[in-house]
Image (tube, rainbow, N blue to C red; front, side):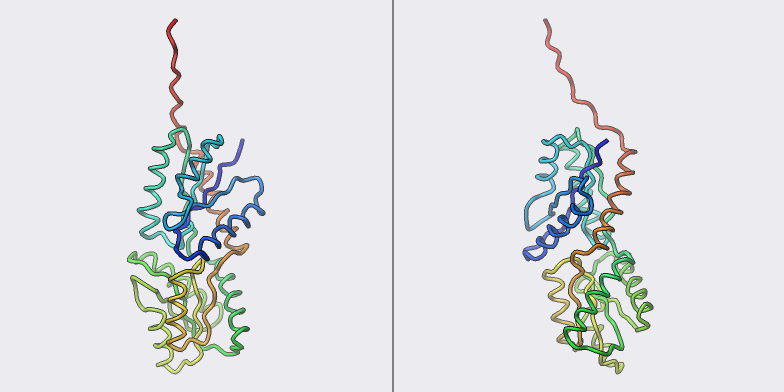
Length: 260
């Protein structure tokens, strides 16, 4: 029995660094699981679309597909755009079994990656002392998504025995700049900002610029490609693959019988 194909569905960005990160992640995943068919696709801004990828797989005889939303939260794109892609794909390719996995999410394992990125930044900047942290994420109008960032920030602070604030670039407060300034007003002069973004792009760049302007002594790079991220992708894929077994099989193609 062939394992379902894995289609990574990223948001997409006009910044080429973002797509490059996604493709590098796919390369990493292929090295970890050379038994799987793994492809990248994007919701917007850059090719290929999920329909192009799924259509190609269908033409090659693939029968089952897990679509993994490479998103950090279960907010608008996960609740609206991803289900729409799944519904449209099932309509276009009725002989395929297609399911979406959970989003990548703000998993605790990402703190290990965050720490490595932060240590590299502190070393490069020769920063030897910290007395507060800020965890910067995209932000959402979905309060539950923002609460997931706040929870992860709390765990990060406990790990390093430092006070920490969750901050958001858009759609929620405080902003990274506001969070840094608040710590500085309280007398904490050595504030570092962790970048809770998967790939480089407009929002992480904005978070870094506003944080440094506000006086942050260090801002870590986005999480990027790592073994932890790849394992999290494969975990989400595995759970969805099991769920795929419970789906009703697609209707068989009608057989046209010619009369004698």
